[in-house]
Amino acid sequence: MRIAQIAPLYETVPPTFYGGTERIISYLTEALVEFGHDVTIFAAAGSQTNAKLVPCRDKALWLDDRPLKSATAAHLSMLDAVRRRSNEFDVLHFHLSHFIHFPLFEHMAGRTVTTPHGRLDYVDLPAAYACWPGFPMVSISDRQRQPLPDARWMATVQHGLPLDLYTPPTVGTEAEVAGHLAFLGRFSRDKRPDRAIEIARRTGLKLKMAAKLHKEDEAYFRQAVEPALGDGQIEHVGEIGDADKPAFLGNAAALLFPIDWPEPFGLVVIEAMACGTPVIAWDNGAMREIIDDGVTGFVVNSIEEAVDAVARARQLDRRRIRAVFEQRFSAAVMARNYVAVYEDLIRTSSRPAMAVVG
Image 1 (cartoon, rainbow, N blue to C red):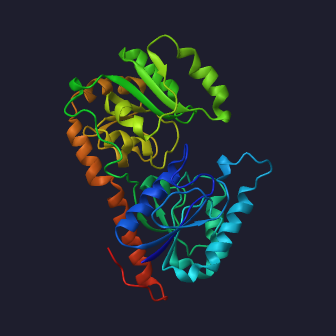
Image 2 (cartoon, rainbow, N blue to C red):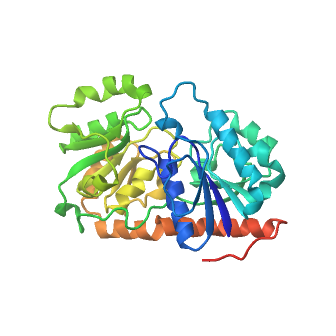
């Protein structure tokens, strides 16, 4: 198939810094290329890919220190380039937020698929989608769909990671690992690092926090997190990259994911699973779809339940956690599921398509 991937312009693909959406787009694109498909990606300059790259902005928006940037204008320019070349592709896969591409591609909606990577409970989204109901959609979890039940959902395709991205540094049971608790993500109110701190206090285990601090979260961080640092039990190790995650996650007793918002997926959860590490997550968003309770971790509703889950996590088989990751959350599994969506689009589209490969 000839497939176009249309990425946001905020970060490069893959991202230079924080950017879960761009990472998933990269993993999907590279897997599709490995399968033998003809893939073109529209993205910011500086992106790295084995597909054909169409650079649509000279710098990623978040890497550009020039004043008076317009994300809307940048994305509209990219969409015009995609539209002009649309006949070169069998499928146009959009990863943009809030349906900004719908008006420009209404006449070819049946050859498009849209994956929203964020929450869909914005009050204006149902009315906007109702204006263009013909656009096929793919959710990243079933829970993500709930605020938009009338959309043309074709499938749920969960995220996946390359199998060789993280190699578990330890195997077996909890007794073989160092035993700290891990928190990975952002210091935001939605992620509730304060809950992670409280769990660590009650269990007596050390908590290592590898998190990004956005400017808008500084007040929350100063009030809820900073006072706990510096006593030796709660440690902020700074942001970490892929090279550091196997040790950070793989040597942890558990990853704490005490979210307080309807998380549509939670990429860090499968990163932990890739390292063989159990996850203790709050019962919000898609957590029950991702975590096999009692196998790859525990889904809880209180600090007390989380403390109890830390003790029970010691009994989980870390080899099995890694095996579940390989079976459910590899980049190849994700790509095959998207290929099935693309093939369905081609079958139902009036436009002739090239033969499917891979």
